[in-house]
Image 1 (spheres, protein in one colour):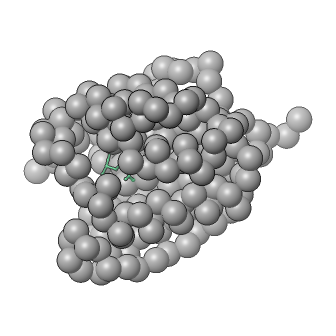
Image 2 (tube, helix red, strand yellow):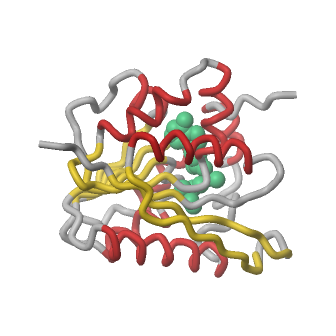
Amino acid sequence: MFLKFDKRYFNRAFTNEDPWRYSVSQYEKTKYLRQIEAIRAFCPQPHSILEVGCAEGVFTSMLREAFPQAKITGIDISPIAITRAREACKDCANVELIEGDAIQVFCDGLLHDHRFDVIIQSESLHYIFVRLFLRRKVHSYLRGIAERLNNRGIFVTSNGINLQSRLMLLASYRLMGKLCRPELAAKYREWSDFRERHIGYDLRVFRMTRSA
Ligand SMILES: C[S@@+](CC[C@H](N)C(=O)[O-])C[C@H]1O[C@@H](n2cnc3c(N)ncnc32)[C@H](O)[C@@H]1O
């Protein structure tokens, strides 16, 4: 059976606070820090960051601290998550949190007049892939990401690799690699205090290079 991974699905997940233990898990913290290091390495002074699937704003706050000069925009499909993210980031200047569907942003032109130095989408690519695949919009979505990057801007993504996600992620990375230059393809394996087992995940960086 295909799960729908839509607004209802994620709102149900967020009935419990912090359903994926993002705020307390050492595994998640390490993964977030790796993503921040990747941004520092490939785009040291970003002025604008879009975080897709920002959930309850745990990583958003870390991005805020790491890049105080940047305007940070977070988007999430779940209104419950966005309400909590706004609370978590209420003292953070220069953070905007939007309830919305990333598919509408990248396929249907929402935020069409915005460009970003960094777009980061972690642990939601495979959920969105299922919906995109059913609508034959995978390429259009990734092209939408590429088009919303400033020249030399980067797309950063880090995702748990398992039997369900592996092929979707590989297909996404292959397509993205035709739109933007691959800069980093790293793999890690770490103990998850939440799942109580070792989990493998990747970290990918792609750079938009437009010729003048
Ligand atoms: C597993 S959580 C990952 C949270 C965070 N990115 C991280 O790496 O810790 C997936 C998040 O993506 C959001 N999401 C899923 N589909 C989405 C979509 N189409 N548009 C925006 N957000 C979406 C969910 O609501 C959820 O907050």
